[in-house]
Image (cartoon, rainbow, N blue to C red):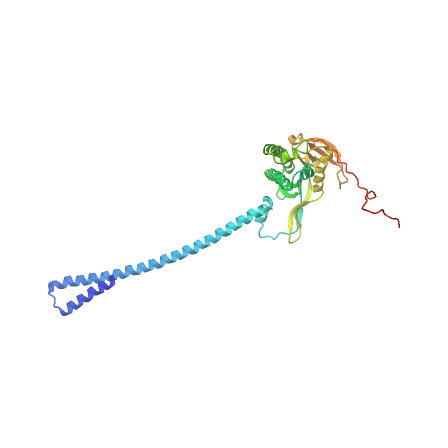
Length: 338
């Protein structure tokens, strides 16, 4: 519109100047007006050009912003997905192992392991069979999850790694996969903490009812306890399984001895059994926490194990089961000699 107006004014001036004779004193103003009109037209075209360039630049910036916004949105979605994946994976993989996988993501996991010295801890719930018999499955599962949740925190707070949940038991290792100079001491300190943890859990159950109120109907003592076995020695630590499905594990005689010591508590009437190999590497305050129980043979081992133990529980005589006789059964015919 402005361009058409300027062109119209210039056209009128040219026509007037050509057909109408102008006096000399009018020539200067008319020339000045023509100059100003042309100069305004030129400036207008420059501004119009700059405006169009700015518009194009703004459109490019908007397109670039939209593209960057979409890239950031895709990256945030990918980060959210990875965060959820890590959260879900971390629920199944111990933190120490997950860190190793992150640092070695370029390397393909392989089967096999290496020798290292570690301390193995086996713990399980005392009288679990009685617990499972007298509680419904949902209550039993809740009790197990509460115990395991507390135990895992105790192990991780002492730089240990929980490798497996074995029914009512748990296997933890100190000194693998990460190096831990004081792994025997950390393992025993962890068990000290677990003793207090079980006391706290029993106090909680006594207030809220639940498991303890159900158990008290059948047992004189409704408090829940645990047994623990500790042994220090050489293990093979690494990946166990197949090329398509594997897990981090520790194997060797050290693991077997720790498991047998945990079971030895039954016959000793103790809560925690510590091997002599572990005891010898403990600081003095932890050595005084346990008392000697002599030499004991454990299943699957020819050499006796020096045992030091903590706590005492009343020994319970095994149940006497009535033996069924096939001859007395009216549903099974007597065997005939051939």
